[in-house]
Length: 194
Image (cartoon, rainbow, N blue to C red):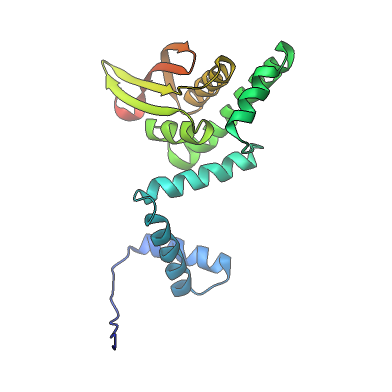
C-alpha cells in the first residue's frame, strides 16, 4: 500500500512564529524541526489528557515549584511527618509555606495573570489530593478546596498557602472557613469585574 503525503500550509500568526523562531534559535535547531517536535509532544500528551493547555500549565507550575525548593513525596508519608512535628517545628513549617506560597503566587501572577483559573491550577499543583471548585456567588467567588483524608495540620498548611496565594494574585479574601480537609474562601477578583 502506498501512502501519498501532501504538504499542508497552516496559517500561523507572525507573533507566534517570531516566538517560535527565538525559542528554536535558543535550542539550536531549525524552526521547522522545532515546531514539529513541539507539536509531536503536544499530540502525545493529548492522547492521555485532552486539555493540553492545562497540561502545559501544570507542567510549568511543577517546574516553578521545584525551583522554589518544593519536592514531591508520597502523600501518606508527608501526612504522617506533618502530624509528628512538635509545635515549634510545625510553626516554622507554616511560616515557610507562607513565604514560599507568596513567592510562588507572585511568579504565577506574572506568568499567567492574576485570576481565579491561575489560583485553581496552583492549588491543584500544591495540594493534588484536594478537589478545587470555584463558584460565582453574590458579589464575588467562592473557592472550595476539599480532601476527604487530609489531617487537620495539613489543612492548616493548605489554608496558609491559599491565603498567601490569594494575596499574591490580587484576590481579596472576604471570608475563610476551615474544617478538617475543607477550606471555603470567599474572594473578590478585580480581573472578573468584581
